[in-house]
Structure formats: structure tokens, C-alpha cells
Image (tube, rainbow, N blue to C red):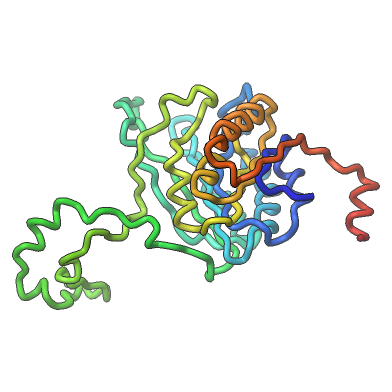
Length: 297
């Protein structure tokens, strides 16, 4: 069965069992956070989160290409006045599965409004954790370069002698810089902090992220034509981002309402992009006898 450019209804841990090994270039997803979205996904207690997620992560590991990347948007929940450790525990258990914890990005929510609790302030960030199967993964850093910025006009206009040579670290770290290397550059590499406003106008989902967030990672880790998977698709934002960047996609969600919303949004997006065909169908779980036939074949 060809899953490319489809949105499937079902539990991703079960649906993915019918996917071929090493078939996905990028997994980008934001699963339900602990004790969140109870009305739509039932909610998962923080103490149960790792055991709930690990079987799904096992399937993610199997379907991801050795050169692929998995980006997990997740955040700790505060329980009884302190951060719960389920994200840390999950990272450690996923490493036992064979995942490599390569990097961690921070999404800075530029439009987060002020607030506080008795022992802390409001968060205006979320984590995006990068996992890989191999240290030799595809990464296209030039695709996400940013304008050099106004600071360069003054900083680079008057260079000292130290600026024109490699200024070795004063603390012996081995890192140094030659500031003159930035002269004449229009673009530079970004940091691992991504500054984007939260999605305020998408009323289709309780936790929608801005489309520029998956777009940034799709550009960084894939090329046109590559396959992007979101196993917790929600309202379909990752699929839309893939389509707009000429990538193939596959989305999975357990909630029929969100599947219908995603399919409608994808159809609207594809009106101006007829080169990407979409086929939609509800996933039909194979019976145990059918599964046995597939394994024997």
C-alpha cells in the first residue's frame, strides 16, 4: 500500500506497522503533552507518559531512514509545583531503543503574554528535540540561513588587528573567531533558538503551532520530493508545510474530526499546487490472519 500524500485515521503506533522500513526522511510532530487535550486524546498522566510513547517511538525508529531525522516538539508539565521528569526519562529510554539524541532546539514564542505562578513565571518557549538513527544524517544548513543583521554595519566597519586574525578563546576552550570573515556577507547561520509567534488564528486545534515552525525543519533536513511524516497530525499544519515546500507527506491522527479538518485544509492548499496528488482513506487495520500472510510474503 502506498502511503505517500495521504492522511490516515488511526493510532500511529498501529498504522505505522504496515509502513516499510527506512521509508521516511523526516518525522516532525507534537504529540499530546501529559494531561493535556483530554477531550480529544484522553490525556496521558505524566507518570505513564514514557510507557505510552515508547512503542510508538519504536515504530518511528523503524520507518525512519538511516539518513533521516526525528524532531519531537514536547514540554515538561509542572506537577505539584515542580517540573516533572518525564521528558528526561523519555530521552534516556529512547537512547536505549537505539536513538541518538543529537540536538535540542528552542522555540521562543515571541507573542507570549506575561504571567506568573507563586513559584515561577510563564514559559514562552518549547523544546524541539532532535533524534537520529545515525550520526550521518542529511542536513542542509544553507537552506535556513538568515540576514546578517543591523549589528554588522557598525561592528564590521572598524576592525581591530585582533578582529582580522583568529582570536583564540581566553579560557582555553579551543574556540576562536576571525571577525573579518563576516565582512561582505549578507547571510549567516542561525542559532538553535527559533523566534516565532504562536498560532493565534487557527481555531481548528487546541495546540496548533505556526506553519513556519515545521517549514524551518523541513528545509533544514529534507530536499524537494522527500517524505515528511507527522504521526500526531492534528489540524494538518505539517502536511501543509510539506506541500508548500514541494515535499511529500503522510499524516496520522486518532481523532476523526481532526483528520477531516486536515484533509479539507490540504485540499484547499492543493488547489494551486496540482502537481502533488492527494489520496485519502481511513486506515483499515489488518486482521491477525492478514498480518500473518503479509509476514510470510
